Length: 110
Image (cartoon, rainbow, N blue to C red; front, side, top):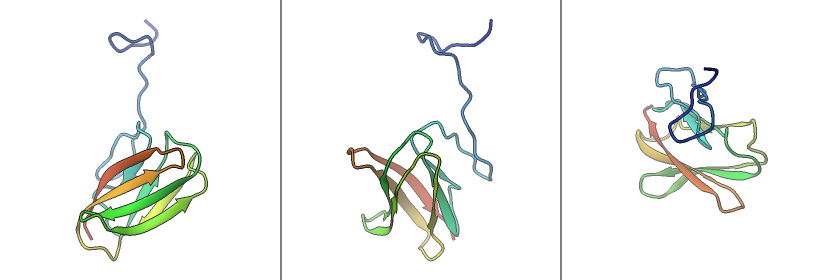
C-alpha cells in the first residue's frame, strides 16, 4: 500500500502544514492566522490564495481597526500590529477583487 486515501475519494492523504508556537494550528485553508491568541502582532498567510487582496482587522462591533492592501498573496505574509488594541475578539477579513471574502477569528490578549 503506497498511500492512504479518504473513504470515497481517489486522492491520497496529504499531511497539512503546522505552524510553530504555543497554539499551533493547521494551515490547510485559504488563509491562516497565527498566533491566536495574539499579543503585539498577528500574522496572516495565504496558502490557498493568489492575486491581490485587502486584509481588514475588524472589531467585534464591526469597526475596521486596521486595513492593509496586499499586492500579491501567493507566498506572502501580512503582519498586523495589534499591540495598542483592547483585549477581545476580532475578525480578520481577506477580500479579493473576484468577490472572495474569507473571515477568521482572532483573539487579542495584550
